[in-house]
Image (cartoon, rainbow, N blue to C red; front, side, top):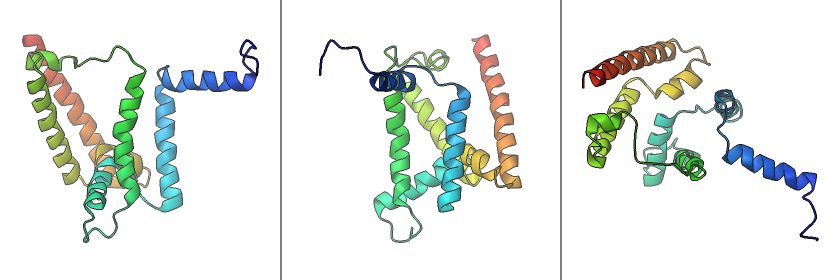
Length: 177
C-alpha cells in the first residue's frame, strides 16, 4: 500500500463519518429521532419500557443481585453505565470543557463544594419526584405519552409548567443579585 496515495472513497467515508459523529454538534432532531427509535425498538422487540429512573432502580437491583428483584434486567445496568460513558465520550472532542456552570456560579460564588451540594440536593429532589410520579419525565414523555397514558401526559405537562415557573423565579432572583 502506497502511503502517498490519496485516500479511497471508502476511507474518506469513515473519516467524514467520524468527524460528523464526534466533532460536530448534532441537530436536535437527530437526537430526538435516535431516542424515539430506540424507545420504539425496545417496546416493539422486547415489550420493555425505556426510562432512566426505572432503569436505574432495576440496574441497582441487578448489580446488588437482589433476590426479590426477579424482573431486573442486566441490560439496564449497561444502559445506565452507557449514559455516563456516552456523556464522557461526547465531551472528549470538546477542548473547552470547564467546571464553570453558567449562572449556578453566581449563586454558589464559584465554589465547587457549593455547586456539588446544589447539584446533589437537586438530583435527590428530581429522583424523589420521579419516583413519586411513577417514572422520570423522559420515561413518561417517551413511553407514557406514546402508549396513551393520561397520567404520563399530565406529569409531562406539569413538569414543563414547573420548569418554566422555577426558571423564571430563579432568573428573577439572579437579576436582583
